[in-house]
Each structure stands twice: as structure tokens, then as C-alpha cells.
Image (cartoon, rainbow, N blue to C red; front, side, top):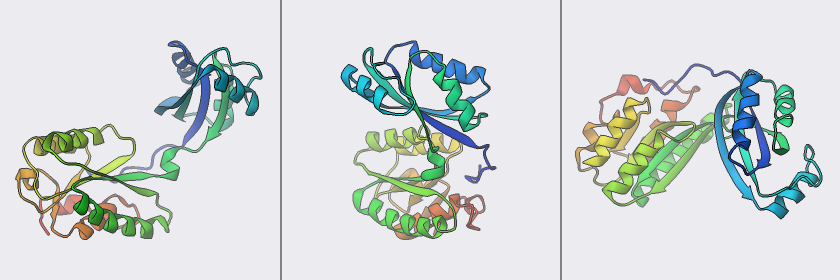
Amino acid sequence: MSPRRAALPPTVAIRVVHDDRPDALPAILAVIAAAGGTIRTMSTVRRLPADDAAADAGAVEGGTPGAGRGPAVETEIEIEGLEEEALDGTVAAAPGVRERRATRALHRIFGKRVIVVGGGAQVAQVALGAVSEADRHNLRGERISVDTIPLVGEANIAGAVRAVADLPRARLLVLAGSIMGGEISAAAEELRAVGIPVIALNMVGSITDHVDLVVSDPVQAGTMAVMAVADTATFDLARQRGRRY
């Protein structure tokens, strides 16, 4: 499966401060669904104690002075199928809402994500190539971000590889290290099975037999990873699958 995907429907985002009760968030999601909105992403930004919640609710437009009846939660929600004004009115009517404000969907700000996992020195070199290449494409209107985490140990790296499938906007993983195999190879196959390609540096271990592309130069690996996900590039990872450079 190619990391390039068809253009997605427009998404709007809203940040909501609401009561910290088990039934509060389901009630908000229910009114959004009833209005025709489809939830795409949702995350808890922070928890607010009672005093902070009362102050925040009265200080921000859309809040109700003195509404801080107890602890609150701030939640970011991205929705398809509703215009921004309609979404604001819908959420305002939900029970337990103390404050809301429109924000920008993260895919419009940080865009597609290239994830780099492995040893510190190799990760740094891959990131060098990826960030430099992302800069070229982002100047043309792309939004590509590069996330890195240096890790040691088979279990830790395998866990990180599997977690990439759950990261929002993750489009490609680069494995950067000196030796990887075993459970890491199994995790890489699982990730590829859900449609996220994997590029690996040429290293010791079985991992090079379980990825889409093997690249010896870490800077070039980072460059090719960004080219693979950029709509403004002509590099097609599907045509390079199984090759080594």
C-alpha cells in the first residue's frame, strides 16, 4: 500500500473544557454525531482542578462565569462533516460544556509524520536527511514533520514499532540502528500489514528481510523517507520495494 492517499475531506477542530465526569464526553460526542459530524481524532489535552476550571470557564469567550462546579477536562476533537460555526453551536448545547474554542486540525499544521526509531547516532543522521528534505517540500505547501526516539533493547524497540500504528498521521517508519531482528522484525511485519511502510538502515540482523526498503546511508534514508510520503515528490516507494541501496 502506498503511503500516498487520496485527498481527505476537510476536518475542523474544537477544544472543549467540560466536566470531569464519566458521562460528560460521551454526551458531547453524541450531540456531534446527531448533528452529522464524524469524529476523526480525539485527545485529552489536560485535566483542570476545580479552582482552575472555574477561572478558565469565566475568562475565555464561550465560557460561563462561575461555571466551575468541580474538576474539568480539556479535550481536543477533530470532526468531519460539520462546518466550524455549526460545530460550535452544537457543542455549546451539550451538557457539561464550560468552554469551547475553534482550533486548527493537526494535519493542517504538522501534517504527515515520519517516525524514526533506533540508536541515537543513527537516528540523528536519519533525522538530518529527513528534516532537510521535509524543508524543501514544506516550502511548496506540504506539511511533513519528523519525530524521533532513540531506544535500546529488542523489547523496547519492538514496542515502539507496534505503537506507530496507533500514532495519528504516522505515514512511514525508519528503523535506524546497528543490529535489529527477532521481535523487532515481527513488529515491522505487523506495521506493514496495516499499511505503514518501513525503511531500515543496512544493519546486522533479520530486520532487513522484513522491511520495504534498505538504505545504507542514514542521511539518504531520511531523505528517501520524506520523498516517499510527499505529494510534491515523484519518488514511489512501491516501485522500490525489496531493493537495497
